[in-house]
Image 1 (cartoon, one colour):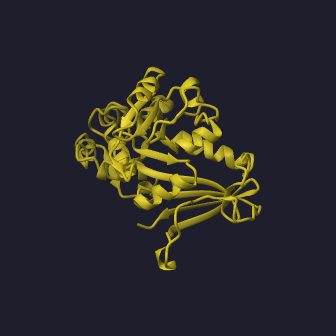
Image 2 (image 1 turned 90 degrees about the vertical axis):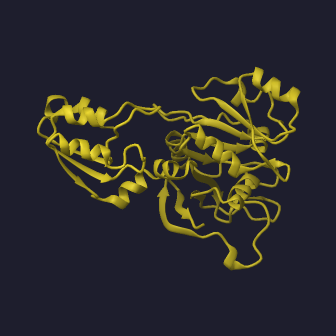
Image 3 (image 1 turned 120 degrees about the vertical axis):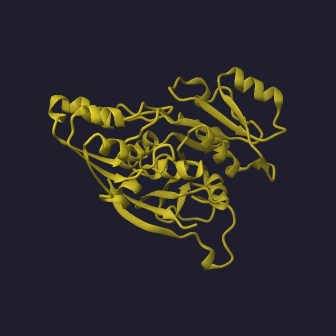
Length: 314
């Protein structure tokens, strides 16, 4: 961001104030070169920093170097807001595990499909566009194999200039079809099939030959251990994951405790019926006190739909 700001400012950068949500870094990482030398050479006279970089390779070092160069530095301005803007980076840096957002599009009574499986489209075009924005800002998108079998999604970002996330399919028995769009259609992002030890070797090879990566994850009751999957994704520098699965993947992710935030798009309609598909499967808790709580919940309208966003209380 600092490099983009300097490039756009040009000569006007000299003598100006630079505002950043995150302390300028001092090291070269996989994504970008260090920003601190560029800030020092830009000619700015003052730098306002929202939060200190939690990366131990930086953690105050950038600020120290900038001050040593004779530039005024102010820290801690809107610190909480800056931490929220950088929440995926902060969690990954502190824990090595990606920040996980679960996105659900449902009716007022919590349904995502009719008994026959029809689900397109419950929410309106504005909500769907907002969903594509979520794909754009996350490093990876995760669904279960049943979603692939039923909907054959591309899992791409269909907004101008959008970035396709890495497509991750949870598939314990490798049922992902070789003709699925996530295998056959071109994308700047790769497809990763997460499976378990003992998955069919011949099937694994065919998927690999078709261009997918097959990632073997520890088994938990015969299924992919989602906690182990998140650890392995974190080691690949995947900082954020968007879950857009079906009812059972949603239930498994919540049960595993990997979800940090929920974003629900709620259409003003009632599906009704016990046989329609709920947004979250599995078994309900025995006691109301065991229900999953949202904290810092915010409600907004997106077109004709409601959007409820909040953090999952651990």
